[in-house]
Amino acid sequence: MGAMPPPVMNQADPQAVLNALLLAVQRSAEFGAGSEHMQDMADCSKAALAYAQAWAILNPQLDPAGLPLDHHIQMEQVRGQAQLALEQQRGANALQVAKEAARAPTPARSVQVRRDSTGRATSYESS
Image: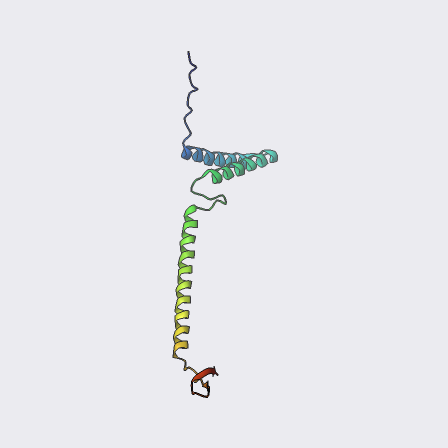
């Protein structure tokens, strides 16, 4: 007969993992603060830092630097609004320059036409 497949392990609840890490940070910090031995304090500090870094890395609401993702979304919106305002101003400036150029008087040109002996134009020169 066929072998039974291995039992499927239930995945841990991500929020429960994050909460356990925060609790570990708190307990490490409290134990280190209450210790009278320097080595225990140092070890607890290292452990608290490691747990805090793990929490920051595993938290889906934070980027790798520990900043909230909402902050990035807000910054992109602000950047987009600033870029839009800049492009609108550039367009307004370009329109103003075009209007000024269109209002400027055109210098008078003199055209010299060369004619052959029959009176037909053979060439012209513009200055």
